[in-house]
Image 1 (tube, rainbow, N blue to C red):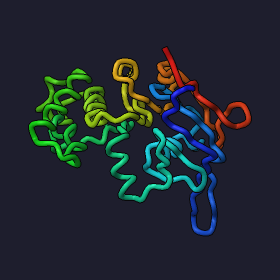
Image 2 (tube, helix red, strand yellow):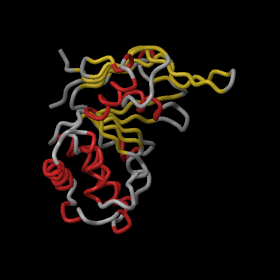
Image 3 (spheres, rainbow, N blue to C red):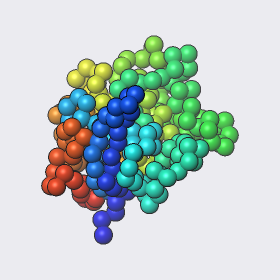
Image 4 (cartoon, rainbow, N blue to C red):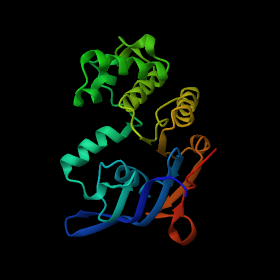
Length: 237
């Protein structure tokens, strides 16, 4: 049996604006295998980021269920969901969301402040994460002292410092020049292959999507595939 890590079952998402209901996702069915690198594409407003946020536990579906590693996250309380998210999901954004008054090391350490690790252990994890992204020599630098590509590397180190099972990336190369973008995509590919991170990446860039194992398309809230559902292969060599 294929090892499915993420299962999205008949998920619909609507938002309310006054008395008007705005449909965003319509009966999405999607299985993502452990160790998969999936690119999610589609025009602006197609629901890509909404689906990513649902998988990451930032938002909740209006109906349907989302199961990750056997846990139905759709039914968790807000407190339980926040705790689950902190342990299991690493976030990578287009704009790096680094805190300018903190050093690279301090930015990477932030997710660990929610754990019971000692300061010494936290810094060991921080050093490891920054070494993985090739910035162990920039630990004391502030964001303003780094290039855009280096800032995104710090953001990726922050995303992996808790060793999450899943990385969600929303247009991770959207604010970078071509060379920096390629370096970030190579890093994501390495995290997937060497560290077996399952990655779900929203992108509008065909070059970025070419680094993924699988590409799916969203159009007006519907996955383009057989019967409106798309199942991603759950295992790769």
